[in-house]
Length: 110
Length: 116
Image 1 (cartoon, rainbow over the protein chains, first blue to last red):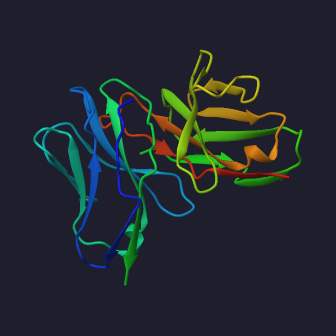
Image 2 (cartoon, rainbow over the protein chains, first blue to last red):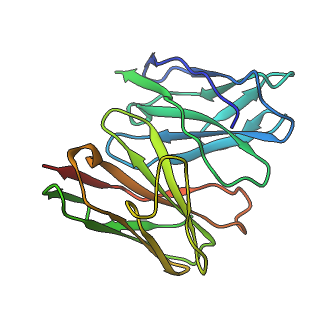
Image 3 (cartoon, rainbow over the protein chains, first blue to last red):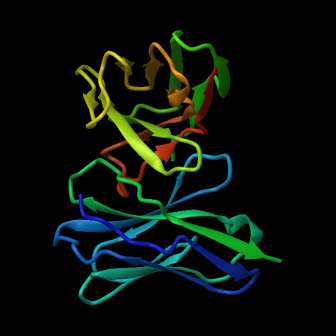
């Protein structure tokens, strides 16, 4: 499984945008980039995923570099409820396994 | 989305005993997964459980220690056998329906296990 690298932690102010980076230099052509987050004392939840083009949904946006070796999860207006561990995961087309790295702990200040 | 419940939500057990964790989904799903999350750590996949076939275990996990059942498309159990304090973790099940267009996985709330 291709590896991802994320900062250990980040901090944001409430109501401000947050950019969570992820490096995946060994990504293969069939790897999708998935993001999950884990709120305190809960199981992980799906956030967004993409292959090549930038993606938007009601939770977040995913910006993917042209060479696909990095991506950024964007939370447009952080709230206290967004404080969680964010996991960037590469998942092969047709693959079912999610291989979780250490993730980024996001702290949101009021 | 799929709603997943796990029982028990937490338990404290004595070493040498076994605990069976149940995972119930509110809809039929093709794939179910069991993960372990040790204190302060990320999630590690234990095994994939498909209905009608033997579970597929990841490296470092064996059937004798973590037997899994998958009797139908909405239910699975994971047993943690002959427990030791090192088995103290949160155990989570997740599901995925290959027919779901996003192929996202949905996770249960977890079972917090403490082994004394």
